[in-house]
Image 1 (cartoon, rainbow, N blue to C red):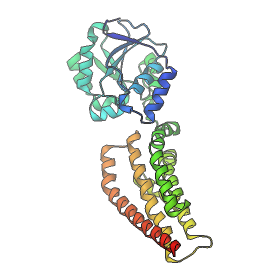
Image 2 (image 1 turned 90 degrees about the vertical axis):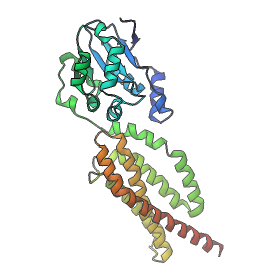
Image 3 (image 1 turned 180 degrees about the vertical axis):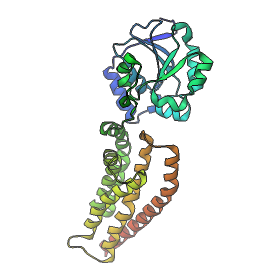
Image 4 (image 1 turned 90 degrees about the horizontal axis):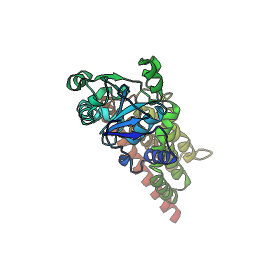
Amino acid sequence: MNIACRPTTGVITFANRWDHFLARAGVNRMARRVEPGLYGLGKPTAQTLVVVTANYRLSFDALRAALNGTDAYILVLNTQGINVWCAAGEGTFGTDELVRQVEAAALAEVVNHRVLILPQLGAPGVAAHEVKKRTGFKVEYGPVRAADLPAYLKTRQATPEMRRVRFTLADRMTVALVDILKPLPLMALVAVVLYFLGGPLPALAVILATLAATALFPALLPWLPTREFSTKGFILGGVVALPLALAALGNPPALGWLPLARAAMYLLAVPPAVAYLALLFTGSTTFTSRAGVRREIFAYIPVMAWMFGAGVVLALVVFAAQFWGGRA
């Protein structure tokens, strides 16, 4: 094994899994980095294939775990701790960095073949012809998921299923875990404040809106109507707001200005709040584009701001009326 090649294994320890959990929870996420360079898995030889990945710890661990029991070289690019898909879009998983690491590892002296296997989601950042011209190494694109690599390496042919970008319920909820955990402290604080200002229903509205956007939206994403994340969020937010508005009217419904104002504040504030958080989820999916997200931002953020602002103003009026009415 070349002196510049670091040994690694395909074993994922409990400490690794705990580190993965912390990363997904957003705890010091950008610190989960692997030293760039060449790694040897098993007992690689001059004939062993070279698989390329990012220096994001979770990407590296997923790859080495998938290749457990296989001899392989893993070439890790310096993507500044960002996963392959995102780094390819930003340019850090790119042609220049790939060439730099090939040369730094003296890869032409380590192996007697000239093949680099890159993850399919890294393709947007790499010009394969330029890599071949500058290094002599041919770029092949492997499957989307690391778990399919062992089967791919046997035939060097990717099946249509290997090429298919999947974003299953389990995938969506794993990503959503971060979105659920992050707002919990703020959500709890706002709910407590609203409970003392307006009673249990406003506090419940905050909890339901947050959980709808961070948990229910990812779960129902493929089945919610429309293709835009913002309008999907508005629809889900409306479903959440409707029972809150009905509860605000009372049973039997009261048609005075104050019950109607209470109902209106939920219908105005909840849907845009859910829609905004839903729009943020675009960065966690595999089927959005910068152009599409930018278009949604310009089209819907002003609507969200005006609706939510009107809901907040109405809520302040309602809370003030309740406060002065109680004092009277």
